[in-house]
Length: 132
Image 1 (cartoon, rainbow, N blue to C red):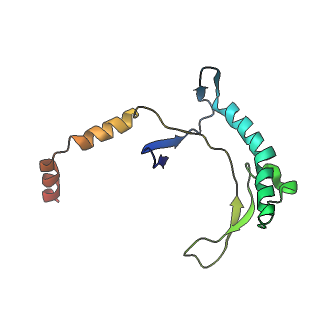
Image 2 (image 1 turned 60 degrees about the horizontal axis):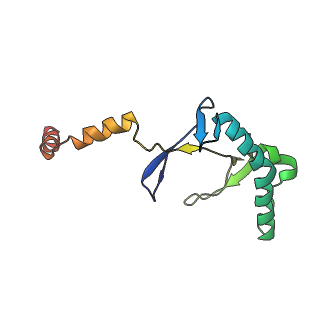
Image 3 (image 1 turned 90 degrees about the vertical axis):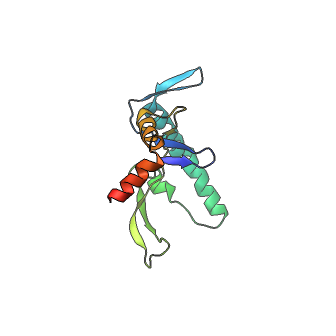
C-alpha cells in the first residue's frame, strides 16, 4: 500500500488478475488485459525512450537489444549501492507497470479500525496505561 501525501488517501496494489475494472463509460475489462497491454507498450516503447534519454544524458545504456523483454518479467542482472552500505549488492532489477486503487469510501476493515480508535476515551487510555 502507498499513501498519496497530497490527498492522504491510501492506494493498494491490484494484483488479482480476475478483478474487472470500469474506466469512464466506455471501457470495462479485466485487470490482466490492461496490464498485458500496458506491459507490452512498456517493453516496446517506454524502455526504448528511457534508454535514449539515458544515452543523451551520458548515463549509459540499458542493453535492450539482448534483454528488452526481461526488464518487466524475470529482471536483468544488476548491482545496487545503497546509502549506509559499504559494498555493492548483486541481484536482479526489473521495471513493471503496477496498478493501484484507492476507494472513495473506506473499506469495512478500515471503518472498523477507525471506529475503535474514535471510541477510545481518554479515561480508557489512562486505564489501559495504569494496568501495565
